[in-house]
Length: 263
Image (cartoon, rainbow, N blue to C red; front, top):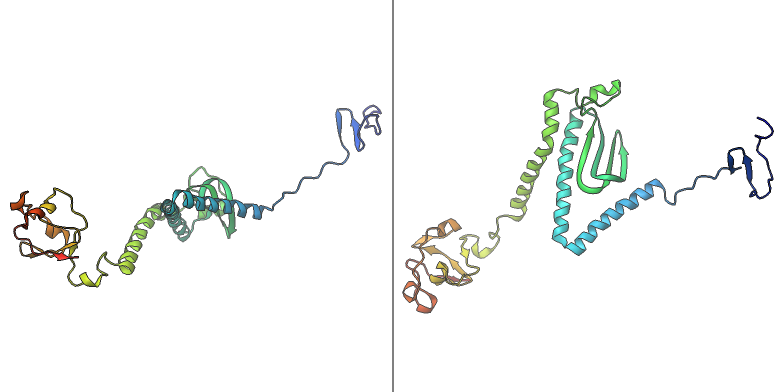
């Protein structure tokens, strides 16, 4: 390096701490990188809290039913992917990721060989299994744990496990419904032994109006036959309109109709 190429100190007009180089100038001491205000863990938890806050705001402004529908869809998607995840683990495949949502990552945690997390757009979920396609490059040591290396029946079980979870969920919900809630109406002591159909509303100028039915009436029999369910009411003929047909104003009733019970 010649004397002209060496950096010179103390040039007039140069800020203190700078040296002159042939190609320009640069600081004597490089600026230290700035530290983030929040750690990565705190930042991820904060982003997750914002998503939960957005869901809460949805329930406040759009209503609780809308929030319940959105949460139900998210749970259904998670259960769908859970079926793939559990079956893949049972088949000896390596699952590297289990994420809810798409887009930028909001929060994640690693447990064992799998990373679990939440992403910004809660419109789905996915499970990443090692070697899902033949073009993926895999360490030869882990080739025996890839999806493509397993027998056909194991791969098929992983593929259909997501849909099978929907059927299991439906069976579970029906079991809970009939076990904990029961059949609608049979929890009332007055109709437990002899369930009857009760009239809620009568449409004007309808056959029911022509038969003289009123809101609150409980149908017990038609033409001498007991009425237990709605099927028993089918085929019951409607009387003609007018006083002769049993309209309320005419003082008559439908032929064969049993006296009504007041609800």
